Amino acid sequence: MDGIEANEHAITSRTTVQRAMTRVETGHQTGIRLLKCVLIAVALGAVPSAPTAAQSLRGSSASLDLQNRVAREHDFSFIETGERVTYFASRGWLQRVTPNRNFELHAVSFPYARPEVATFVERLARQYRAACGEQLVVTSLTRPTTRQPRNASERSVHPTGMAVDLRYSRDRNCRNWLEGVLTSLESAGVLEATRERYPAHYHVAVFPKQYKSYVGQVATRATQRVTQIAYTVRNGDSLWTIARRLGTTVEVIKQKNGINGSKIFAGQVLEVPSSR
Image (cartoon, rainbow, N blue to C red; front, side, top):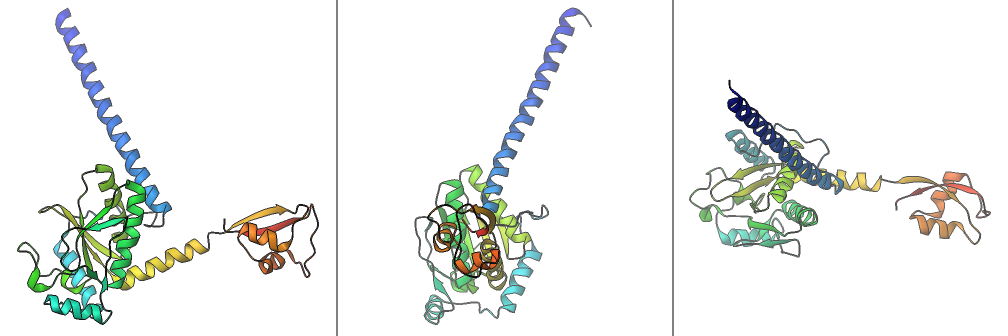
């Protein structure tokens, strides 16, 4: 190899290394953005903290089997007409989904869903907007068997009111956030989600009883998230003012510190559970 060839070879090698480093750096940055999105979701109580990587949102025959099995376990009817949708809503079996600042309904003919699905949409939309800065777009809810699109599966659970379709965002970070949340909730066993291609959207079948239980567990964890602090009593303090300031009650402070009456003194250190 002469000098020119060696020089060209060295330049080519450096270029290859630089390109490889660029790809690694780009992947690293993308990974950081995705991690931040998932951490936001966890902090908001949207998802379990340890998602299962096996979930892929690709959909399968097994997923449809599961969705239909859950529909049967809930004794859900497959609603046939728009009139029946209205009837189900009048009986309280379906709840009207009303858009707000966090989500919009786009071309939704029947804006009704099972109550737990309505809760899912409202919670997800609030967290989605906080994480992504844009509205969540719902494109379908309850859909009677006589109003199914041509490309719909014969086993679709949309006619039961337990499914919702979400628009595929143009923002990659928003897609990453949403897919991370859906994957985590799927691994928690509270829904089945599929990323559809034609047209591009997310099909989500919410399992009402399982999701209701999950939301209850999230609420319980939130109420138990109490911090114990050592509070030094200042001049002018009373048990009532301390309790009010730290988000607890006089009785809790007294019980925690073995206080029988109501007298405290400046400089005294109290162990106080605080929810603030």
